[in-house]
Length: 108
Length: 113
Image 1: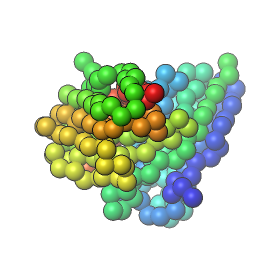
Image 2 (image 1 turned 120 degrees about the vertical axis):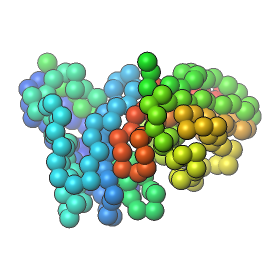
Image 3 (image 1 turned 120 degrees about the horizontal axis):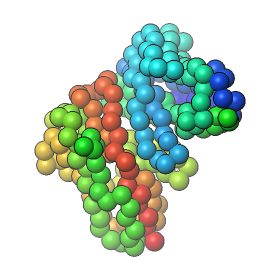
């Protein structure tokens, strides 16, 4: 069992739809990262969260420490948002675990 | 001005060879990382250095050895390459350890034949 679970594994949306990607983890964490991997392979860090909520443009990330759960929301989705979204949890003891990723396709 | 650069971008080599992948960051960051992404696109951390000191050393074969000559560089040396080492290797850096945003290099695709 992976320490970090993501859902859904694959997601197809129409342009303009509101998208939610979920990430759950099994133990207490120090921080959680959301990453975006473009179709060309490059990885970009979107957010680093240890509590609450962060917003950047059309992207919103939230984390609920008690429920051990984080969500990444994309408002007004666009085809250029098509990518793999990965959550990664930094755990006590210098452990760093990645989710399996959510492959998002936004159709025009 | 590339923030985190890796060389080479592609590396094709035969089993048993020794190879190195170089990583450099010009962000003035104190922490650098090496990650491996396998054929199923699953990412896993391999090593992390903070101020040239090893702080994460995951369970990887001891054929893999990181070398940090200074804070701006973290190289990955691999001895006696095996078919299973074929993957994409990403270098990353962050301002400090542990809870800071990471900046990733473009990746090095290693193919062992």
